[in-house]
Image (cartoon, rainbow, N blue to C red; front, side, top):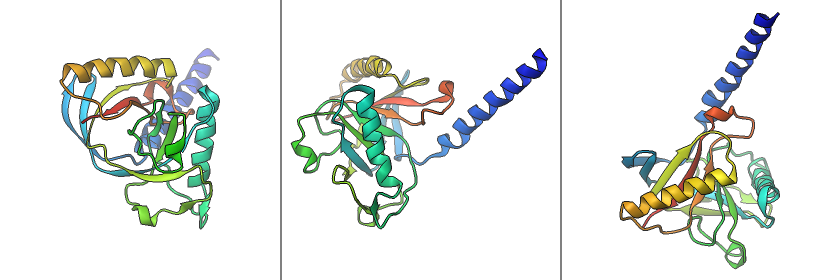
Length: 207
C-alpha cells in the first residue's frame, strides 16, 4: 500500500512538473539577447514589445488580484471585437512611480506608482491589437533597450522580490550602470505551477 501510494504521488508530481515545464515554459515572452552575465545577474538587450497595463488601486495581494482580473478581462475577450489574445509571460508589476512601464493618459495622472502589465504576443503590432472595453487598460510600446535582471525560483512572494531587487541594485551599481526607471517584478508562471520550477525575476531598465 505504501509503495502504491508513493508511486501515485510521484506520478502526480511528475505531471505537475511536466505541465509547468512544457506548457507554461513555452509561453511567448519579450525577445532579448544576454550581453553580459555575472553570477545570477544578466545584462540583457530587449527588442521593443507591447504591453497592456493598468493602475492597481488597492495595496497588497488584493491590488495584485484586482489588476490581474482587469488585464485578464481584456485578453479573454473584453475588447472590440471580443477577440481572445494568447497568454504570454511574464506578468509585470511596478511598485514605484517612474517610466519602466510607459505611462499614457489617463494613467499618467494616477497618484499611485503601482501598476501591472501583460506582455502582448510578439507577432502583434499596436494597430492590430483590439481596443480594450475597459478604459483602465492601456496599450503601450516598451523600448527598454538594456536591462539588468536577476532570477529566482519558488513562490513569488513580495519579500523575496524586494530582497532580489536590493541584490540587483547593488550589482548594477558595481557594474557602473545607471537605472533608467524603477524595478519591475516579473512572474512567468501561474499560481498553479510547480513551485520549484517557477521563474521569477526582478528587471531594472538601464540608461
